[in-house]
Amino acid sequence: MSVPSITSTLLRAEIQSLQPHLVKWRRQLHKYPELGFQEYRTAEFISQKLQEWGINHQTGIAKTGIVANIPGHKKGPVLAIRADMDALPIQEENDVPYRSQYNGRMHACGHDGHVALALGTAWYLSKNPQNFAGTVKIIFQPAEENPGGAKPMIEAGVLKNPDVDAIIGLHIWNNLPLGTVGVRSGPLMAAAETFRCTIFGKGGHGAMPQQTIDSILVAAQIVNTLQTIVARNVNPIDSAVVTVGEFHAGTAPNVIADTAQISGTVRYFNPALAEFLPRRLEEIIAGVCQSHGASYNLNYMRLYPPLINNKTITELVRSAASSVIETPAGIVPECQTMGSEDMAFFLQEVPGCYFFLGSANLSQNLVYPHHHPRFDFDETVLGMGVEIFVRCVEKFCV
Image 1 (cartoon, rainbow, N blue to C red):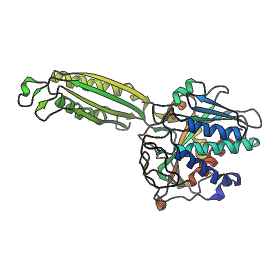
Image 2 (image 1 turned 120 degrees about the vertical axis):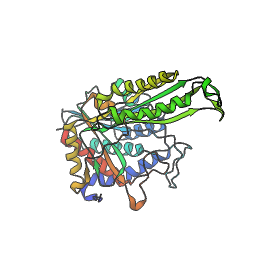
Image 3 (image 1 turned 90 degrees about the vertical axis):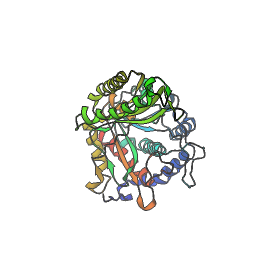
Image 4 (image 1 turned 60 degrees about the vertical axis):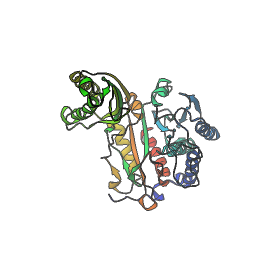
């Protein structure tokens, strides 16, 4: 793919002048990463900025979350903008001045950039209320990575008082080059579910298998058979994944293990698969165990639902992004991923759109993937994100 260019001429003068501040804020946040529901320093930084700009906000929501309300020049609709704040338990390997100061913690997914550009959006809107009607509600959410802060914030009432009519959010995305925006209606990101299963057999001597029920054999057959779910039970038009990522069993080469443990993840876009996949998974486990005389214990956990964008709000975002990107090739509709996001919970409550903002730059070696210890992105994307957010506000809040 050719890389569409993004130039400062596409950003209004106030946002161009904001760019160095966005970089400064992002780097400050990057130096002090905090894990989910522990973002106290991050929340304090956000609150200080909002207070400095005279923006009304509430802190301590779902422990560390913040909601800011920015009124326009007259009554109108309410648009929410969501930005996640948390980092990952990863040791950073980048040799940069803003390297993480905390061992074993790193902003390896771009959430520091999300906070910075959400702050930039808040600053601009608070200085220019004449450009929009209604209210913009900016949600700074904890714990996207784990265990999920969107649902607790919704339960705390962040979509109420005033009631949110629509919500948007973005992810800085190193899977796309700088100067592109990945946006599509319908399913964008997959559901994330996980399972842990213990197989109970009967241990014994490795030379006398007739006296045992080999839990490793049973578990291995289960691993193989689970792959038939996607291959033979799911419509090929519906994407799905069943991955076994852990297999633990045995203590010695000449001992048949009496227990084996497997765990994995299940991903899908189509909500209609939500009941079928765990049911079929257990049917296979139960059937294989029964055929060998083994038993099992299964723990199936639903984490995040599929992230599904509303068609109308997606068109709004696409229109705003198209006015910032210089060429049609910069709008990328084929941008689905089997990754997951708890923004999906917000989109179950109100219509909205979540989109990807391309941030990779090969010429600067800023191409490492998300969750990599050398992840970093082209910070030019920050001003671009603010401009797109602002244009969404000006198109929606009229």
